[in-house]
Image (cartoon, rainbow, N blue to C red; front, side, top):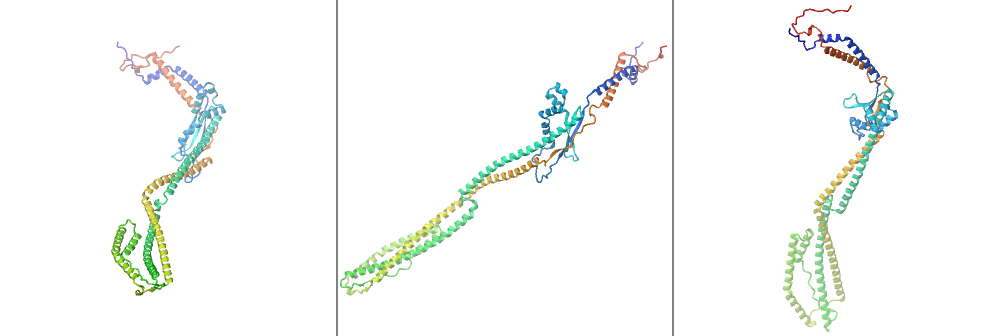
Length: 522
């Protein structure tokens, strides 16, 4: 007979049949597991959670008037504050003051206890009506006692408030101190540049670009003065020529009369008071040389000696002087003949020579006139020397002004470099001064708590019931787990027995010969 092959898969009827056959075991396992888990759940220590809400208040003074120097975002600031608030010394002082974690302190190290407390403290951001940033944050703490949870949450919240105020004040003060230091250095550099600029202006006074108009005006004035001096020299030269001519004429008259008086004194027959005088002719009209000298003086009044026109006139004057000397040399024999004739006339007896009596008063007047002309000539000569000295001085001044004007481009470049450094330092100093004043106002604003600050919006309250553990939920979960675990164990036990649970487990088309009813014990 062919052996029966039982289907390997488990049908719902087989599972139900197996659990039904082990129903007493399943119920006992379920009840025991439920009681055990419920007992464990209700034996857990309750934990109370308390919340302290801290609001972030905006700056009370408009930023258009006072800008805060602390611009750290709230999230980054909370991270920095969390490191300070949850520091080792601060938390351990809180643990000792409130006698927290007594059992853990008995068997764990200080670092392990602090790690447990940091895990129990939570910092959560609370979003406000605006989605642009958080308007508040909450400090969460859980403890076995409700009063301890509220107290720790409030203290940690105050830690955040005080630490935020201290850090913002320190940052604002540090910014102000830093700007004060930078301002002092900028002021020192500015003073150094001011000294350099001042020394440069004092050293090169008269050569500065802004003095160009004054230099041009001074040179124009000097040229005008030079023109006046040249004209005065020309007039003095003419006066000198006239005086020299007049003096030569007067001296010739005096000499002739003295010679005539000497001859009369030598001639014993002639009266002593009578003198034969040959009256000299009047001065001749100005010659071509005199006109050339006047033109040279006028040219010098307008131009320097190196000017081509002045050089040409000087050459012309030299040529005329040479011609005049040659003419005088050619006329010398005629003059000598006239002198010889005069000597012959003097040798002629007095009776044959007509004589003119010259009184002594006339001789004295002629001598006085000669002395006056000599004094006038000396005065004119002194005036010419003085004018020539002034002319040289004005020429030196014009040359000095020209040198200064030629040096203007170089001085302009040097002054531009010095001024650029000075303006840079001055702008930097003004900027730092404005920033320093703004930083001082911001520091005062932080001290008076008029800037962004933390405010305890809602203090932590004593919770009325524990937040952990959730006993009903855990008990229900334990009951369900016990039922499922009991069903699994019962099915495995029935499966291990290797029993046929019903005809549905037989292969298909298996003939059934009969059914044996359930026998009951009598």
